[in-house]
Amino acid sequence: QVQLVESGGGLVQAGGSLRLSCAASGRTFRSYAMGWFRQAPGKERESVATINWSGATTYYADSVKGRFTISRDNVKEMVYLQMNSLKPEDTAIYYCAARTVPDVGVPGADYDYWGPGTQVSVSS
Image (cartoon, rainbow, N blue to C red; front, side, top):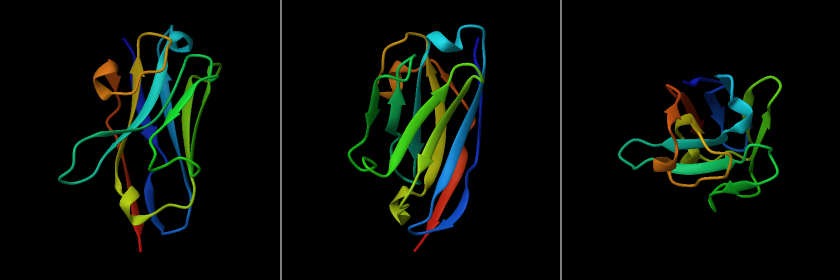
């Protein structure tokens, strides 16, 4: 069983930055791939960024490449999403998710555990 809790969301102006954190509990965290997903009102959930067990392999959605960075700390059992140059279209609830295999997965269906989410709002 893995429990995930996101933090760091909030309201920011366009062009600003936020850093999301995800605290994970579980004895085998370091063997899990992790991901950040988001869902805006009236839209489907989409993959934002994912990372394999070691941090050596990452995936980014085209819409966030060059602006967002995913990272992890296996000692602290934390996953981070650094978001720079935020745009109003980045407004959504952001979810942290864990996949009980070490390799990067992209679709949300690949992931087994989910946090409750944190709201990110970007004003123009």
